[in-house]
Image (cartoon, rainbow, N blue to C red; front, side):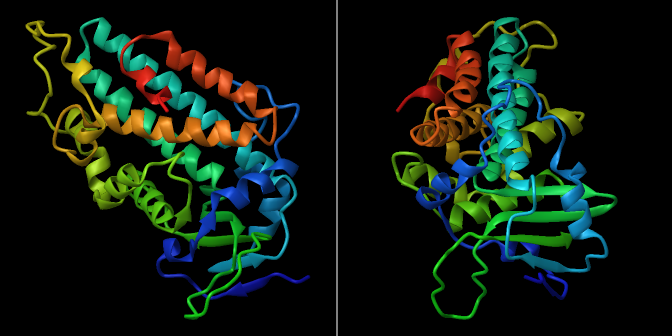
Length: 302
């Protein structure tokens, strides 16, 4: 069947419509590679897939493909697994920084843990934002073609949507993540309504505020650790989910990372009930979460 090409989409995120995790998780079964090597990068990124490169050649605007692009979904799920493993690795590293008297830089590691986790969760839901030969592409591999017609449309998830758009910065990725949170249907056992509501209420800038203070603000630094005068190393033990709605607090990157990794762990565990291949991917995540004893273990709580 010939793919349909539409005009330019001014706001590419508006092309991302609802999805149901219960339905998507079973659809992944055909594409989870049994020969994947947990803890290692995928053999090649989605941006180098010959089939995808061919599809986007000459693309202007939006393209809807009523079938899978060969190799695309397999690569997306591989990349998602590795993003989540890197996320756990970085959260474990944040604890190492605290243990060695570097709590300020631990917040940067925790933020990047959260950022990788958000990209991994987007991947589990079939969404990536990549560059191919100078084209910046938002891709939804489980698109429902649910246009804004005002009428309900039954999801079938058989389509791949590709939108040519601008180059995203980290704020755009968080904006996309929030868009997906608003449109996804997911059991409260995997993501509590309270956490979901709090994440949706944040502004895209809130997610990276503390990280940007550390990286770019010459007169802002969260702790007195550069001078070596920091004496209290127990502050991190007081973090809780209640801090997620307070992006102005210095602990925010940590609780953000913990909350997202907890969500990702639940999604992976749910996926493993359908495919035991995922157990190996979960083992890598858990190994890093169990490596240290402070807040990364909180992400494994039910």
